[in-house]
Length: 70
Image (cartoon, rainbow, N blue to C red; front, side, top):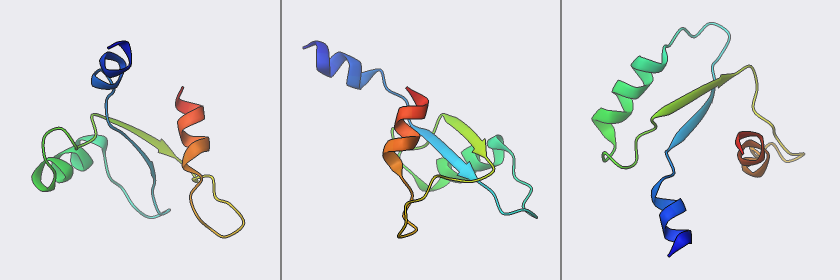
């Protein structure tokens, strides 16, 4: 079906907010994930941000991240 075709073409993306003193590259993160996750689960795309959107309770607003990526 068309819906499953779209789902199969999706890639895993990680949105990352590093601590101010952290210095990590996308390649280092990808290597870290490859060692610990199944091949279909590790992120192919890394997006670095200064902060992540959070709600009043402090939870990350995943819907805002998805909408921003779309």
